[in-house]
Length: 300
Image 1: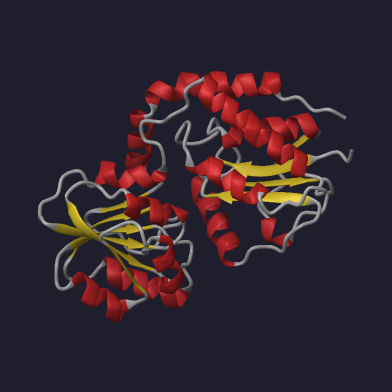
Image 2: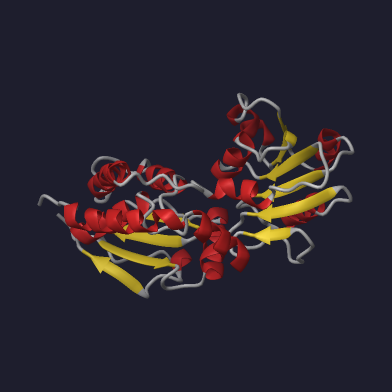
């Protein structure tokens, strides 16, 4: 059995701004699949679990913190998958992100067994300690931040086509009569959201203007595609003459200028809202984290 080293950067080693920037960059230009490692990256972390010392140049921010050994790797990955190391204790999205990263590994991959055991252990911890966050995911933030609406009926523009954007569109805050989604891959997204009901998918500005039909709207930005040309489209859409408030769930701010009614994921007041909403789960998350450390078993 080859020794496993986990090299990581998270909110204990780097600022959320740096981590968000790294996440956006890795989404835009992911390193090639590794036959010796598993890469996990989110807005809050970049993790490299490897049975070799080589670290891709794209992961330049790594190197300040690490663990060594199968047990340590299993413990950390399970704690992450259970949501015990998240800004939102017990969040669901991270479990799916770990599952997606592990799904790329083949049975003889050196990280395969550890990743499967970590997911199993995380699921047991979630059930044992009832890790169900009141604010379950970042997709719930728009509901908290857009509770009071000055104009109704309203439309919600969701910019993005990934897992987070689809979660927002599937459960928009109350008071929005319809959802419009803007993405660079509208054909694929239409297939993915076909059963969501009153959701219109568009690929750019002409389609967006027709879909909004001159009505007022608020915007949720949840895209990892912020290349210069598309960033301009995002800006124009979010700051249109009939646009209202903006909730930015990107790892780095999608808009260079802050306007009235603009909230970013890592604004201090937004982080405080998250902390307040999930304060009651902090003790359970801490106990689950300890339980995972005590029950991480590795057979050599």
